[in-house]
Image (cartoon, rainbow, N blue to C red):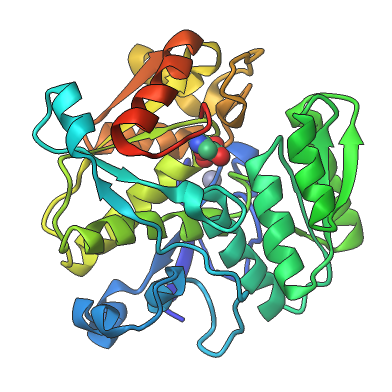
Length: 351
Ligand SMILES: *Cc1c(COP(=O)(O)O)cnc(C)c1O
Ligand SMILES: [Zn+2]
């Protein structure tokens, strides 16, 4: 394994990888930790050609770039390796030369969150953990429930009682233990933290577990490889907690450090008007670490976040790549679904 250290996104303090399990002890929950690699050793051990020779189409084709001991077992579900479509009619409609659609809805439980849960569950197995837990309103919980089921690992999920019924049904169908919390996502989040502490469970909470980003970054590796190691001008992605955009940023930064790509794409984060904390912090030039929660409301339930857990790194991703945040009203979100479906054949949820 080529992990060298964990580094706090707020204060920059470095920790040995076995020293801290979640966020920076000095900075609290805003202090998300970046997993850093010995890029020199990694670059000497593996090349783009080695990756291209892999017969594995899933995210494990990038295994040397992932935080797992060499012989550790991984879950059997096929996560990643999702299609990247050259959406010609969508591009023409938008007046752009090229638009590509990365369809991560094709993952086993239906979202990009499977990438994070695959890495978290693999690490839990490598450490002999007996129960995994998380708090979520939807896709992250489904991803943990599905990946845990694939290896017979019990999962305990804390869900706000207001979460969509269909998503709760999905968790129960995977055999997860579901605890409905009388409160919002934040109360569910805190309960998962306390339960993990008390019972020794491994906590996947988004923006708290450093390894979710390590799974999510693989979507950037795939985009680069699928484009023949060319960097797109911009990557546009929706932002709730800000963990996916942080992962995409990390993925492209890894590739740039390895010299496998020549430049970074601009990252464009899209938020719903009713849940636009990162957009506001970016637009007003505020420090995202000290923001206060709002009462979020949007039809795009998967990107509703009162206080985005990974806001520090999300804003950093946009600032460092010369990108932007965009905030859009719910009616535009809903109107976008049939446009995407009719012009590309990809059917997406509001987020
Ligand atoms: C989770 C999710 C997002 C946003 O990811 P964050 O890490 O919360 O910013 C966007 N779209 C879908 C479908 C999701 O499930
Ligand atoms: Zn810190």
